[in-house]
Length: 349
Image (cartoon, rainbow, N blue to C red):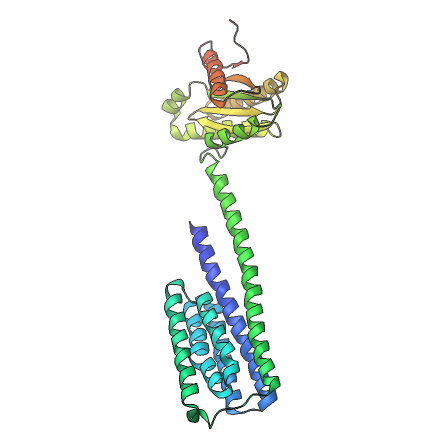
């Protein structure tokens, strides 16, 4: 949950980076082009002031990692002040900036304000356009007729802003998707692990066997294990030692099962091993090593004898998981009731 919250916060900051960088670059280009084409007029100074304010807002957001206020400053400055003023001064060609402003509002304003903000700017721009068209004499003193170069620069700034936003947004989108995919894999892995022993749980075991059973001509062996007299161990030495015993047993199985199959916690004090090889000697040798290490742990930790019993069953085609489990459980039951501390491969009738 914390990872998701962190990712959401990171996404907000990344979106702010896109907004601030695009705004700063576009305003800087606008100022330079105005200075070259028209000289240092009042409108050129105006674009410089807007660029400086946006630069300060961008630095503030990047430094504090809080993008709310800086985003609002940039969007309000652009949509409410700068773009309408440029339209009133230069005319219809600068409607491109107004459209760009509405798009930016939808992309970068917080979700709950997106519709209200974009509608407000839409009607606000509509009123500005209406006043400009219906009362042109009000702006006769400040109006400038842009030449071809100015029009092309306007088009260039609008297009480069759109391209920049698109490229950076797509880059961040792919990055976010990769992080979400990684998080999903981590969550899936956690869902498949037993929290105490950190080996696979029964849920994963069933999924794993279902996939394995679909492979044609697939043969494998399962071994159902049960720690002998585990209740007495818990009662005499406490649950902490009981948990340590389960963890030690799991670690030993994982070590000795390396590249041979998987280790799972079947439930409680029962475990199931899945061997890719059905060779009797491989299975027996692996279990003997686990038995030796487990017995050694019991002697060194509490001076007691620790052992386990088990039942081995081989899977053949057309078998079912439940039947496979039942046969292994039947052999385990036989081992527990005929002296314990043994692994049963076959039951003599």
